[in-house]
Image 1 (cartoon, rainbow, N blue to C red):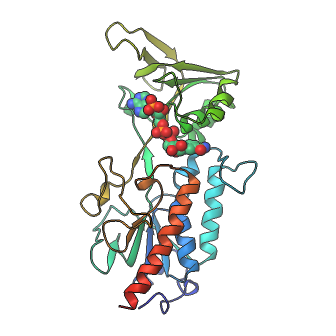
Image 2 (cartoon, rainbow, N blue to C red):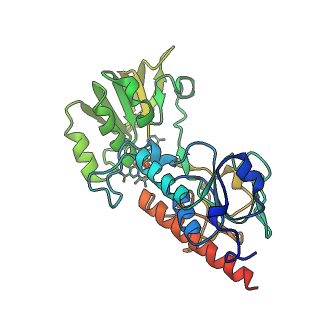
Image 3 (cartoon, rainbow, N blue to C red):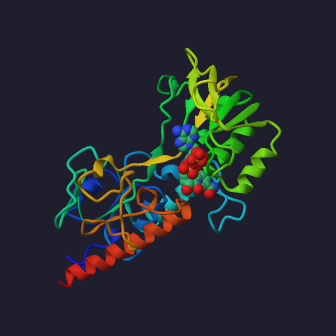
Length: 332
Ligand code: NAP
């Protein structure tokens, strides 16, 4: 069945087990409903491909955990990450994309060969858009106090720290953006970064430096998080001078927000498609992976700039490449 004569999305029906059971083979199955995945579904469905998207949680991906997205074109005042996610989902649904809930890594994954199988769904082409997850620091106390004062999402948990003292660890765009968000709620925000210079955009850094209730702790590495029932303190050490002899500081706090980068969600792809040493999917410019008709888009792939706008662009390219490859396949 070529893309041209496959059922149109109007016929796919509603989400849920009924729709999934009625499916023979999707033209395109997108794994992950963040900005890359949702853009891929919008482009694929508009191109007439019978398209579904598999998500284990709620649509929006990492973007939905961003308090405010300031640099996505078309929103001059900025937009809440969660709202942007909902709008993208609404747009995909309008084009008839079917949303399925499942974990791509949970059951047999078959990407080689003509028919692909992901979580029991069969498809002729697959776009992997599983993004990345917050990196753990591995500090003593971090796992034990996760959810009890240690958080990786200020948008989700910030409201619990109204009028309290918190620290944000990290020096990238996420740490600085979320520190500015937390400063609107918390009485005091410490930004702890291991170097004297930030990786984050200078405009973001200047804005945070100007806030009256933000204090920077630069050149400091976190050593441990203390507390019994909840977070009570964060212990820091001067980065310069090595472990022996470096001065330590104990910040008394109610919460610690960790923003030290992300790791790709590709554990389920090991041995199935080529990954780089850090676990990101290797693609060409058209989002093709090492396996025919398996594409990758967004933060999950090897790339230079990980932003909502580049994720969306990857998704569009992946969908159009899939459409082209499926048409070529149909012509023999
Ligand atoms: P990131 O840019 O990789 O920054 C991670 C930060 O954590 C760095 O400052 C790094 O320090 C620090 N770090 C890493 N490991 C550490 C450790 N073991 N101990 C202490 N500190 C450690 O990650 P991100 O901020 O999550 O951003 C990810 C991507 O999303 C980036 O491309 C970013 O531009 C993008 N993003 C964009 C926006 C926006 O444009 N508004 C908002 C959020 C995220 P060093 O600097 O010393 O390496």
